[in-house]
Image (cartoon, rainbow, N blue to C red):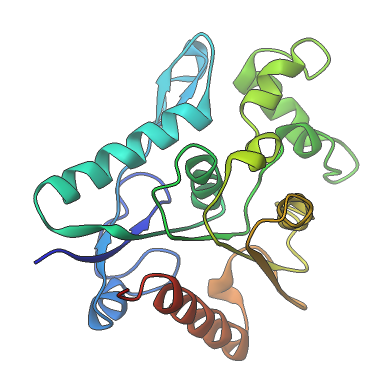
Length: 238
């Protein structure tokens, strides 16, 4: 019998009982969820394709590449009867949150999505103030091979924010209010979704940074309870 499933997106070689995003996968299983943790590779310019987790591309298109890999992993589980194609959820933090956003603007197949500490806009990310400079902008120029003024289309093509009109999945966004890595990007995603009339919720935790493993016990517990309630609500049997 196929069962409801949570797709946990967050990078390479992360499957294991120790958990992803500081959540033990056995907890999901105890609630009746199948958990699938696919390895996701992203395209970068060939000169930057030496490290794990990337593959060379002359024209990096991360949204398309990420969504294709997530869908392939889900199709595998569905075809073998492991998971219910009608009760699919997806969750990720940081880079994994970006994976979530790339996926939901590409396909309506997921019934619930949670993006934690996510980036959605590569243009505003490049403007992010970082210790007196725009360090993210330099990194993005290396990744995309051009500045935003030289090739703004590439920055837009790799930014889920500009395709939020294509998203139909109910979305829960979370962030620590002291998160310097993504600053106000989750808020930007929330405003965009609200303006489009989408089903979206934003939860912010005062005094917390990027990685919830360092958060207070009260906030970590609240986050976990919200995640489980959200999936229970949207992935329940009809």
